[in-house]
Amino acid sequence: MTDFIPTEHPHRRLNPLTGEWVLVSPHRTKRPWLGQTEAPPPDTRPAFDPHCYLCPGNKRAGGAQNPAYSGTFVFNNDFASLLPDTPLKPPAPPARDATGLLQTQPETGLCRVLCFSPRHNLTLPEMDLPDIRRVVDTWAEQYLELGARPDVGYVQIFENKGAVMGCSNPHPHGQIWANRTLPNEPAKEDRAQAAYFAAHGRSLPADYLKLELGLRERLVVENDHFVVLVPYWAVWPFETMLISRRHRQSIDQFSGPERDALADIIKQLTARYDNLFNVSFPYSMGFHQKPTAGGEHPHWHFHAHYYPPLLRSATVKKFMVGYEMLGEPQRDITAEQAAQRLRDAPAVHYKLRR
Image (tube, rainbow, N blue to C red; front, side, top):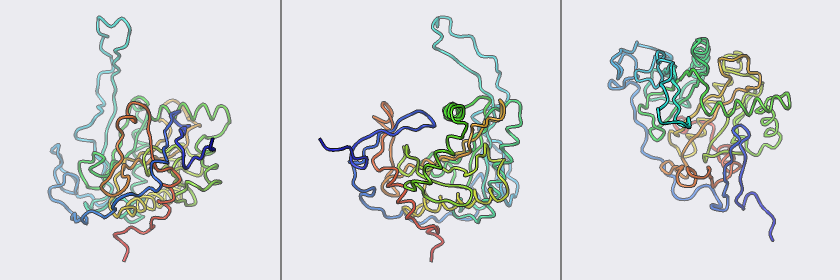
């Protein structure tokens, strides 16, 4: 019998933040790139689009008029998924449901849109660092403002980039949803981090980061205050995790230099993403940070998840179907291979190279 070799044989990896497993099948491909990797036609969007409902001065889809903003711009989503005035009294259970299996819980909240820049033709990796820093400051302001509301328990900051990720408008923007309750994914991480902190008196992400900094197999990019790595348990082909070096619970706790460093590492990571296939790389990303209700939450450690779907080229994506939907997530290229490819990608955005 041959010995087990992690780079050759199927195996499962545990995500300690959620308690869930991912199946890794490295034998299915000996190298991460198969087939062609030509870039699609160049992006020729204008700096201002008179038909874009997010550009300065234009009318939005809901009828409101945007101001002639010159930096970031935040507004309540015209078609919000959460509403602040939803009645909180739940409906009576169905008369014939003696088991209690049919449960309904009213949910209140707010949804906001954050335009990163007035320029229609930019994305975060193409923006100047001072402009990205303004986005970081706005994220912190929104986290504090929404989190201070008595009817908000958790603030989820996120960005869907690219049409393949369901983004309906290419203007650079993200979203902020403020829930009364703790959503499923942060709730899993809350339980795991709380249990680890109770057992060890230390942050789970901090200990994991210390381990990865020692091994250096899955690191992508780092600066004085943040590290980006491909997590050992990554599901998506080029999934990454951004972790603060210091044990901070939320974005509002970062100092000025830490906010500068967050802007810097976001630009470095997203430039490397775009440079993989010379395309504006799609992804869904979001910050996971402490809930805004229920105390100090010392077990929480600020981090971000990036989930990009592209697999082999600018036009070939990973699908979560079949076994992934009915069994558990599965990946072919290992986290270590993905990290190496991202490390090797140029740091200067392909549109800016001469």
